[in-house]
Length: 612
Image (cartoon, rainbow, N blue to C red; front, side, top):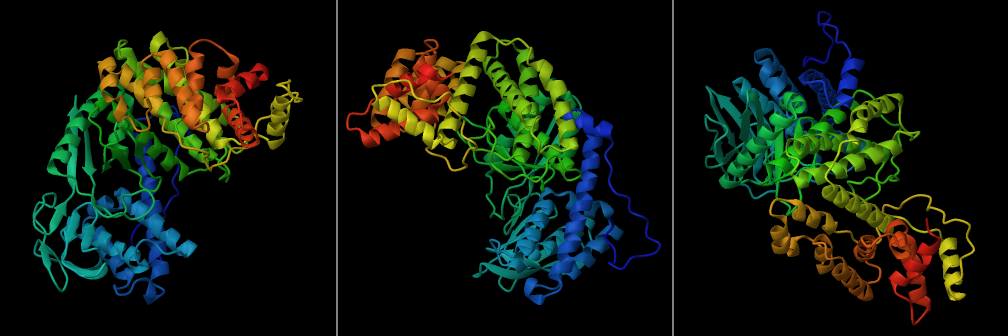
């Protein structure tokens, strides 16, 4: 799609729809394909953004209330058309900017859903003026345009942000470009942009970059801490990194890129074409959270880490999300089914099928990285643990989802490609220690999900309570039926601290790190520490003590089941790991109706006698 006058020009070229060959589709499903398919996805994203952009301008221009006190959005469109004729590469840079997509999607939803965003609608609509100004600056044009000001800030996407004096939360400023000099000004202040837009000067914050190069492979990304549309759900204010934070990002990104080039070259070949912007998020102790949006093709939000391997895993994870998001803008992988009904081992809440499919593909990529790192260093217990954990979690989820009737033919074909790669990995040997820890943590997470999101069938709970009162007789149930569907409303909290503690234990100098840092792990109890340290009896005693004070605690209930399981199979361990929601529901009823209620462990041991 070209930026031209809305009236059709009879001499304009015919615009062909975007097509992705099945060979490229199948290669992407297998995590392959190189940069070629990614470039095709990016080209489709360009057209999608232009369609959204033109649609927004058509809607907003119909009423002054939608863009006043700014000039009509048509003036921004006209400036963009000038940019296309004078310097097409400047327009492409602006359209390819991930947050152009985020802005277009967000503002379109505001109109279609008739809701108010975090700013007045004219501020959101007026962001197209900011995009046009940024593109014109890149093109070196002379121009004048008015732009919205939010909390004194004027965003020029891909360039930086001007800071003006103002007493109003939302106001208007002007951008002027004359003879290579660009200024942003309002009634109270004037900012002259530096010749090097990436540097900071009074009144101006530039977008910094991070570049890494290994064996001829180069990755260059913006560290975007300014763009208002860089968030996941709604516009956010700037969160400026310090110089020290920027340098730390550059250092760890260099280490992560080196790992990808050496161990996962098929991803390193394609990733620079699909990732050009990182949104730095604050570090989260002992974790590496990340996120991305299907509308922000080319961007990932990633928490800071000092560990290159963790950052490399996050980059692979989000790159897989980016590629799948681009594919889903070309074809549907599932029918419309928003029900939050499926277990996802990487989430603590039930997920709709579309979300689970995204997780399968992302963790398929992560599994591939840990597999290569494990192969390169068999003594790396942490890499072996991550490989064992995610290959099993992804494979088990894939097997469930492949049978789901909500999959389209394209979705099923895509998962077939993932299966072709992921299936053989299940046979790779893994050291017994990391493999055992991975199995335990996988069981831990699933049991924690069950106890929080499954509600036992009331008639089953009633029958079990009746049987308990009748001197612990066998209940009159032929089998324990599964609850029909999970609820998205959790019953209790889940810190997932044991997974963090196990990662500490398996890291280099793990025993020392675990003993020194365990109390800093969010939500970790002394019983969790004992469990991760291998002190089974102390852990069992600790969880029993926790349950005597808080018998409904999901973490303590499952923790006791885990610790008991290390002794071998027992009725109590079996019930706590496979039916924790039922144990808790029965124990709650007994506590409510009996003064001298048994312990949760006693109830679990009884239920476990007929639980399979």
